[in-house]
Image (cartoon, rainbow, N blue to C red; front, side, top):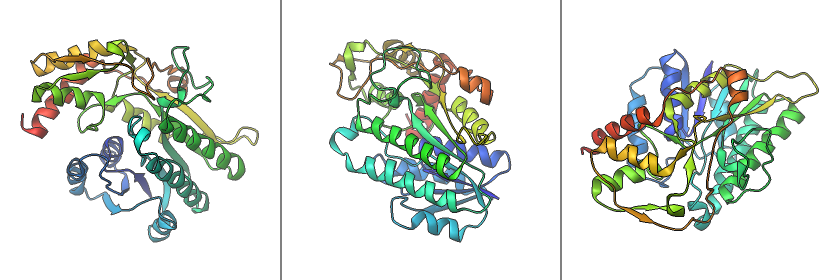
Length: 326
């Protein structure tokens, strides 16, 4: 039996596939390799996976009608799915809304449909986001909090995915787990995220644009900790007691609310260079603070993040130096 990983050329999909292969799993990875950011980075991630006997890759657009159903038909024995394919980025959704509907809603529907028709299907784990907490001011964010005030289209589409999954769990008893990721960073990270943006600017001698004049905090979470949580979730499909649909939501964060300026200082120290800061106003769609309540993740998944930014950031900067030849 194989595990399907969607968005396998992406940051978290890549690391998850590596971890699955390392523990002896057979992985089928799919990705549409779009150009939201440098495709060369996505191909470089795939190159890291290509030499493993347990890995197979197919280029596929999940939003295409019949694409996911055809994939399940041609690859018998898919019993578990890790669905990470999505259009990411809060700011990009302000100017390019269409890809968010196609990738985060239409594709999610196609995955749900394929899973519910698959023989002996066991578990769908999908990526959500801390962005669903939107304008909430109570910290830390708990999975019990209301999430009906999104401040970006990206957040709205991720919440829509959660609601779609809830309905499929209710109607078809499809076992699912949604994971709300909090500001993931680390080697092979996305170029549109803060760790990459700040590090690149420092090494290229360009100023860093600091939104809300630096008065922001994030629950920065190292990728290895996230992957531990992902695998723990995959191995623990929710039960079905006939009353409660087999669908659970969990926060995966570092349970540490770090000031943005301290995060930048940590990158400066690892890079051995000072950053030029250019203070700016808050951007539309952004939130001031994120902070994960991980009580449920600890209780049900044994999730226990262990990497502070003082350890994780130097690992990312070291990878950046090597990958870019700095």
